[in-house]
Length: 287
Ligand code: PRT
Ligand code: ZN
Image 1: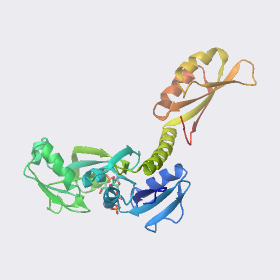
Image 2: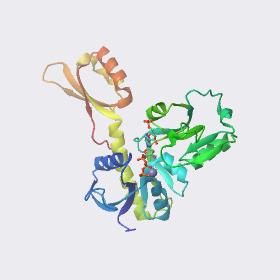
Image 3: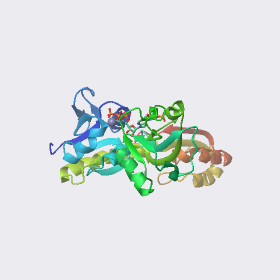
């Protein structure tokens, strides 16, 4: 591993690749020669990318071939390697659930006793069964887990669910949501100082991008006598910017609102006398 370059493993092709590359792009990092190679140098940051199957990323990070990696939390916990989960990245959200045939009744977790459960996550399933003192048989298979109950190979499955449509089309119902997952960034716990510094710089960029995505920039006009009431509704980064308009007695007010509560804030602002409200995305947010 080169001292002055951070090696980051990402999924070669699959559900995580686009999100991973798009996040890097938003951080000002572009790759030079596509994902067809095993490795690529990045522009805009001292980064080398390695493209792998997501299953292999925890091992490569543990072994130090890559300093860090991006993959689903489900896969990190299943592989149980000596890696540190640094932070969630907010994409590829899904959950790991137990599902059974639609027509079967379910009276809680005890119903799983003595059943055959098919999964591609045997380690996490075993942990769930042990914690809940359920005595069931684990059938470890890779791929198309959802078809196994229909083929008589299993009584239940433990699999990733996102929209739920795969379960539905296989005549299955979700009976236990065992864990939530999303893409995370992992790293070797004992990074050398130079590598740690590069990882921190990358995380700083990721934080700025995430913060920007969670916030909106808001601009509005209001008469002078309404400014105080409106300001109280806008916490902003520090306090709103207030500028006089060409029309006597009117002001333009700029601030930042959280994506999650901006509809509520906007209703309150209109009630308080705000006009010409504009809400625009923020590209980067450094505080
Ligand atoms: O080739 P490689 O090993 O790299 O890829 P892979 O085939 O193992 O993984 P991939 O690309 O399918 O998924 C990578 C990661 O994306 C997973 O580990 C999860 O963290 C995350 N993710 C998010 C999902 C889904 N959503 C998802 N819906 N992974 C798989 N699915 C599958 C699931 O297996 C099931 O068959 O989609 C089906 C369920 O989807 P719904 O929408 O019908 O409920
Ligand atoms: Zn995989």
